[in-house]
Amino acid sequence: MKWPVVVGLGAFGLVRPVLNITGVADDLGKPLTPILATVVITLIWIAAVGFTRVPEPVLTLVFAGLTYGVLTIVVSAILSPILDGELQGPLAHPAAIVGVLGVNALWGLIAGLLAAGVRRVRDVPIR
Image (cartoon, rainbow, N blue to C red):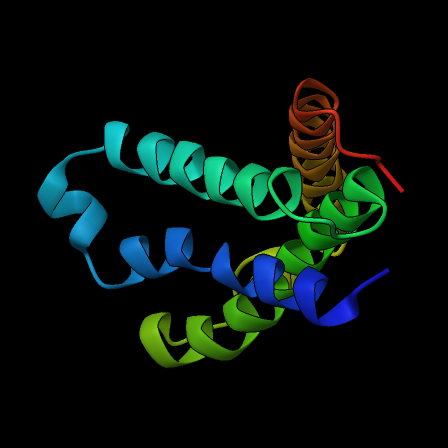
């Protein structure tokens, strides 16, 4: 597993919450902007793993999804008291942590399976 790739792809996913925090998503229009951001991030994840020789494409993107989930929880814990005056998000509702991590692991799993499919089409070994 290439951990710098995992962390880099997970951190790249933070583009999505940054669009919300900065108000760009509101300016460009919701719900289309967050959906398009998710699609673009997913395509970049698939390309970054599907068109390279990163080992374990599925596990790499599952862990990228989990990394993104952890980072969003941390960012929410830091920024919500500053922006909203109180802790909000998963740490304010600990049961939500499981959901956040589960959804993002599933996102990574789907992207990883698609990246593995890209490799198969390209006839590149998956390992």
